[in-house]
Length: 108
Image (cartoon, rainbow, N blue to C red; front, side, top):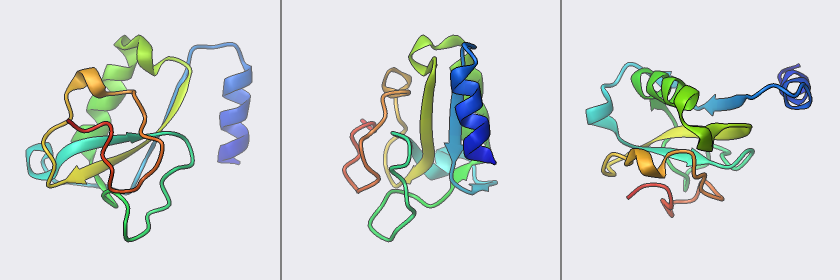
């Protein structure tokens, strides 16, 4: 049903941003590190991938940023925490990494 809703939204002609976060936690963003933005369907939560959860605060910040950032327009993004990495600069947000492997292309 979720996939059908996403497809309906894409075909609607409305400006949209679909954010698919990993399971959310209550960690503070400063304790998590960076945010990883991935292309659709690239995050499978396997052992060699980026984080398996993300701070609720980071997800809400990304949602607000998506409203004002035209790079987020009409896109679908996987979102997870990049533990132990420096915070992701906002200039790198909405530039999805092609896979969830430990090559943190979107994290500077």
